Image (cartoon, rainbow, N blue to C red; front, side, top):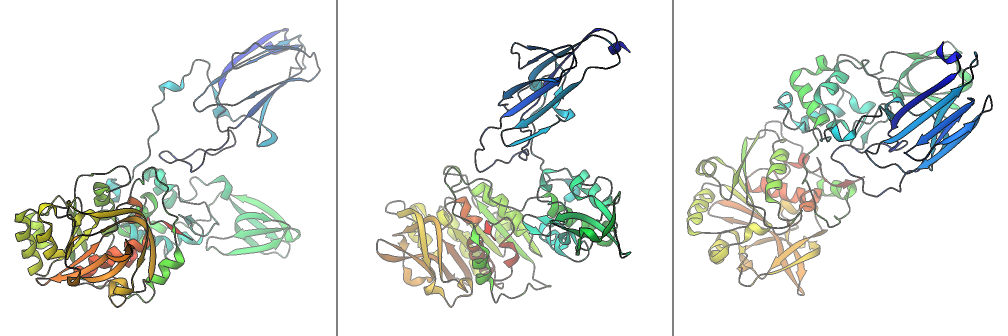
Length: 547
């Protein structure tokens, strides 16, 4: 009623115009490239007697319309968290024909005019400075997931009972009938559990269900996508039916999701917890690689070739106690990251069936030395006299030991250390090189640890000119340094126990290489007297693999 009278109406607001047509990056993640800035053009149209528009605090524009549709445009390059003030006044001469006001935008990447979403408008006095910074969701330590096993959850995702992979993709694997679930580790437990238990509570608008009636009388239900002159209807079993548009008599929206109900009841509490662990927790990886560009991901074909002929996992595998021994970090980001390795590899090894993993700093405890089946050292090594007594007792009772990279350092007692492990680093005259390593496995071609390995390329660090007698080693693989083959992987049996040594292991990315993982996992299993294939399932979770 007031607008029918002569007068002026004034409106003020702030606009958030950042990333209007670009998706946000998940908290804690970053893109691997720098996109060009997005330019936004705002268009304001009005047919009022007079209109005043001011955007971003600049002097405004008066337009005289009085029934004629006039417009003004502003082009901006918004910044993150920038709020752009806008003021609009419309002067009306009265009458039932109310003045028109249309605000739209387009960007330099898409010229189509669009309306601004409501969430882009903020009150004139609001401030982004008051908003707490967003923090990534961390589900790894949730009490609801205590006891959950990521690897078993992966089997549920791809299994027949839950059947998730029939419709969904997770980390690049699965079908694309339903939403890609790879971002679920960034979501909270309660909302994901609700989606599983009540699939129709909140349906992704891109995957709403439709009921399709065909002219022949057949009825199909599922998600529908267009493919030229055809429609593709995907049902809850993952089956797709293709029909021509001319065959469709009617198509109606359904409020029900095609995702079946009753999955939690079918799985039971323990298996549901495993599935939720797989959905909500990222697989274990080394957290950072530093500033250097990591090597390209390992092709899956190479992984499959190395794993060919493996023994299937035994259902009644013997219990194992593995102790991971780490030290204080002594290099820059992405190098010699012993603490990060200890955390990631504990999570990785705990996925294996009937395995207990404990950790130690610097040296295993007396209890560890009594109960462990395998010790794994990744640290700046040292060999004071009292350690020889502990290690000899451990090896004599049949324990297994793995040494990774700098753990072979023997300090002032390198020669005595080499008596146990074969070769040891001597600070007085070491030789080392960072860079490409072409590792030849011909020397160990008959050993189960080196099975199916021929020549492998890593980017890491090699050591040579160490203390010890190479003739005491069972060399598995060598690399050429100073024109001669130098041992880079070897085994040794001493005092009734088994020892496996890997010289590579300088860079964090090496531990996420599936081929290096296979070597290390085989070595740990071999030292414990187990089949070298016992931990094969741990080669891929979180590994850097190309498809």
